[in-house]
Figure (cartoon, rainbow, N blue to C red):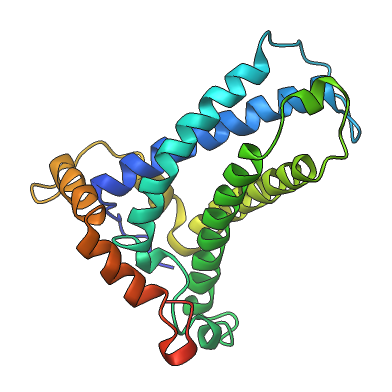
Length: 217
């Protein structure tokens, strides 16, 4: 795989970093909540954090606000990082570079879907379930499963990133410098255009239409 120094767009670095931090905080606070109220699989000998439920909900709400923007970016400017229309064919080329890139895109797509489902299942939960010991509620079980999937996807995301781009690809997301054509103002302009009725209609026609019976682009 190529070891050249890659460049990541500033908008991607900002959004990816924001969502990444929020996901890690959500996982950490979720583990603390599980440790206090559940612990059926195991209990960690760590101190209890006061009002941990409220902290988890706070960052969950921030995540809820930031995730739609990241999803819009991912399905527009970042589309090449997700599954493509020819991904099934590419998966047959086992061991070739394109096979690894396709796996990487698949992991990215599953991570995006998993994050969305974690938000949906979390919104459907009642925090009283935990204090009352009602741990068999469907939405709580789905929320636990979604975060378990997220942890696996994050690990796979890191491994695939190293496989397709090596350490330089991982470090590129942390770079602070940006090129003259790549400014934060461009992200604001893009968000405004994404929220316009014209862009939304174009997006729906391009990605949700039934022509060719192809749902993966």
